[in-house]
Image (cartoon, rainbow, N blue to C red):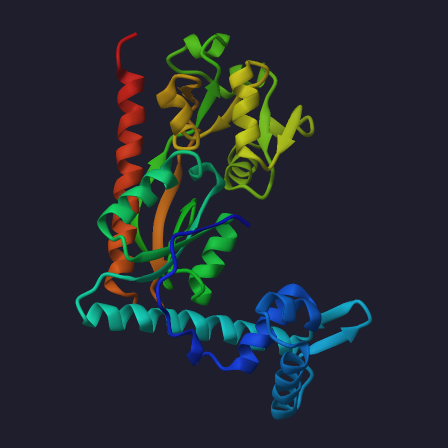
Length: 323
């Protein structure tokens, strides 16, 4: 999971009990010794805190093996509690700063792999320029992971494809993304104003893996593409898909947002699918409706939505330009 962090700002992490913090780190790295190295703290101190927590709860939090430690069911509950506690502490810090009239704090955002080489760098630059005291953490996730993170309180904001509206999620912004084919500029399909799924299937097709939203969309809405088994190439890397398409060896079905940087650079062409049943996907910027987010989180969500909207307008303007 990719993480991007801007410079650290002061937080109130000391409010998280040591025992919970140590248990969380042990769960992450798999042993007391590894946790001691991670935290630069004596292994005996970590072990003592974990044992005290287990004694207080009356339940083992870890299964202990010669090669390390693994969470029990009770331990998983405690680690989730620690993460929620930490998130609440971070939000408290943001709220306190806002009461002082200072736009600073920590925000955690989930985004898709396709956003990493165009949309996200622009958003990070704009946020840093307008709110330089914000600490931003970006995790690259699937839509399912982003939804779970919002609902658990681990995430503040998510931008995801085909994220379904529900009671506990507040959609800040959403727009449709028509299905299309991407091809290299010299490819036969690139000369067409529109194309069909039948025409696309006549060329070597690079298809995204099932962990990506576009693959599940294609299987649900256009199962005929998989009627003869797997396409010639399947990968969970959109970047690899785009490189293969740029080489001219393959074409792919995706959205114009997935290939925005390459379309604007002129290294890929986006050809809309004209089939009547080619329903659009959606891209959604969402926050949790279960809790009150700080003002800066809503500002960041709206800034992100504005960046996506601007990106799509540029891509569509290029497609309509003569020549």
